[in-house]
Image 1 (cartoon, rainbow, N blue to C red):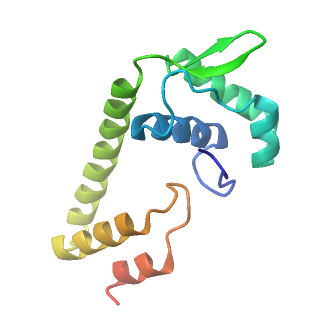
Image 2 (image 1 turned 90 degrees about the horizontal axis):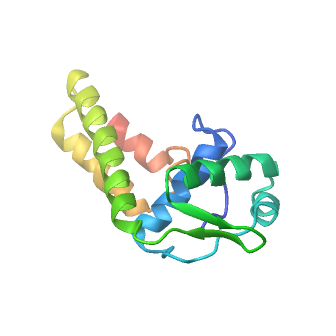
Image 3 (image 1 turned 30 degrees about the vertical axis):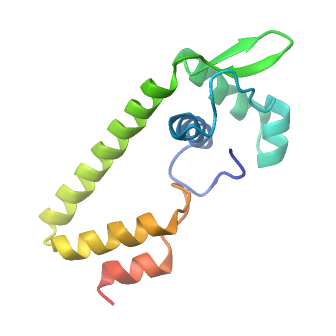
Length: 142
């Protein structure tokens, strides 16, 4: 599920964790009843403060994506995949809409934007990775 976070990203680490869990639920990688790694285990794996993982888990629990069984661990809630997929889709569409509007306002052609979109989708990279050189070159028109 989650192997790394990008501490240089403008997205806070706890939000990256929340988002990765939501992405995994939406895609079906995590299913209702699946157990998440313990706070200690995930913090050690990601080399971050355990409080950051705990904050993420608390946030996801408040949103209804997770539940905690005292002494047992943290689990994916039942009947949450549809809601999660809808939320992830809405967020992605909002970001795409904003990016397209900005590109259009800047005079970037639809074909150049489509080329960047297609190339980005093919890379299958993490949402918090830096923009790869291949994509940056497309944006410059090279």
